[in-house]
Image (cartoon, rainbow, N blue to C red):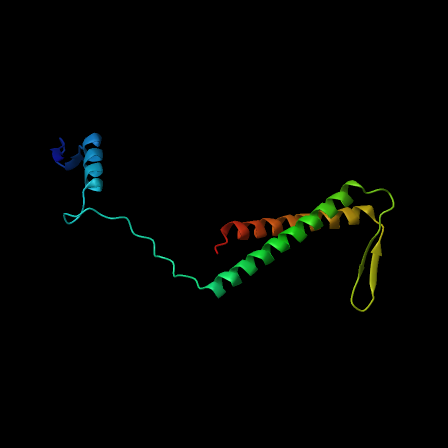
Length: 138
């Protein structure tokens, strides 16, 4: 309901008076009313196309591959964790490239930094693989 009131100085001011409950009820009724005289049906999910046997076997092999990657990663993380907890004063870290050039250090701070970074990276990759496994569809 809208009413117009006139102030003493002669200017008009619109005052809107609406009962909140009435509007809320009306909106709720309008939301539940069917449109065009028919009830609205929820949208049906598109049906999946049937998968042939070869495609299903291919997907199964892919699932096995992802599961295998996760198992190897868990083993590597376990080995790295054992290393982190069994470090003594005489650690060494070395990298050797394909041409035989070697980088070697005994700096324990550098070794722990590399090990912690490696562990964090492996944990992130493990989470990605686990997400893929959980979302996988045959």
